[in-house]
Length: 244
Image 1 (cartoon, helix red, strand yellow):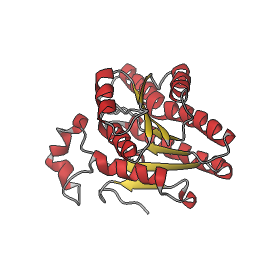
Image 2: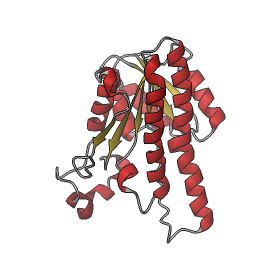
Image 3: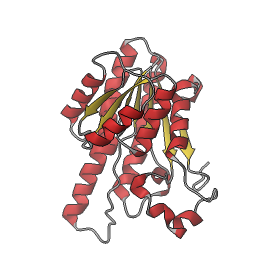
């Protein structure tokens, strides 16, 4: 299996790449700017056939280049839309220029980039006769809201809707689409925040999820999830946010 993983230079993306490589997949690791970190992830992966691809997902032309580069040597069997940003822009404490910039940038990377890559993946996989899979990493924020980062919550809610729309459109072609929706995850980016007693008090497990746990669910979607699960949104938040 050849898999394109976006935002793979660290955190959840790096854990996903490692979990998939450990199961024999070759990984096209997308990164936006930190090549040294991406190279470190690549070196640590099991197996071979892995590659690095740089690009800004907010740029539609760059998305085409990313897809072309990832599929040059062999077709992409699966896409993992993991890349995302979380800029704070609370509505009552953000000026208009910063507010609009946050929305443009956040939706550009978190939603539009994922939508454009999903489009390219869907067409390629369907033309090959199906068998491909698309997994997007969403967030519990899509359901509960993010008062300090509303564009992030909106982008993830949009990602959920995009994925379910694609699942309906692609099921007849044998291409299956899933969403994994974590809560807090113990990445380096949020290392300080997850030590906050208020955050921990909201975690029935007494801790937040690990990147490896999220990666395990992504791997399940790519390798084991039956076709009848297409369109599913799988929560990975340790019962910190429950919905029915």
